[in-house]
Image (cartoon, rainbow, N blue to C red):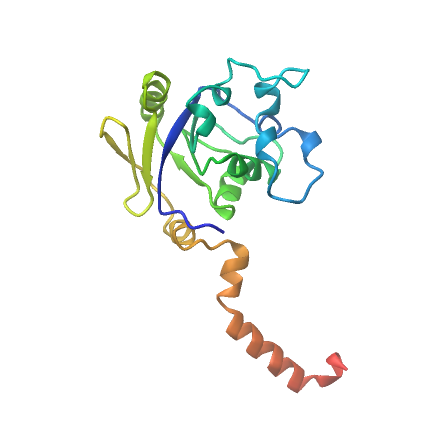
Length: 203
């Protein structure tokens, strides 16, 4: 998993509440077990017309938001079914940070396991960031995990909270597999001991 330390990029405003995982990545795109290639289908029904052409009014179809690395969203983001394809699609599009007043629990947890930083902020802070991102000619934010800060283009700084363990995992780029591999020495020693004490299991 890619480490998350500091991210500076375009922030796209999505002023919608209760954005569910089917809206993030519709069910017809869940056939793959690959984590790549889903970005083009992110927010599919919001981004595209029935003929496949882009809906020009949707934020991610506009400049400069086509290159968004940060998404500012409404409350209860990622609700609905617990599909891990949702963070996969967000990450494959190029977004590594989602800022919202609140998230659905399973989606929130899946973000950390895929190298995405979900930040919870009070509604008034979200409203300010949303307005700035929508009106600014340079809707850029800088997110620094070590200091737990979000810095706007105007230099304003907002602090956010994060669980220390999850922070450590993101900073070091450790998902569940990475955490397990940190104990590979103990795992190998256990297996060797097990083979020596119960060789008939491995005959």
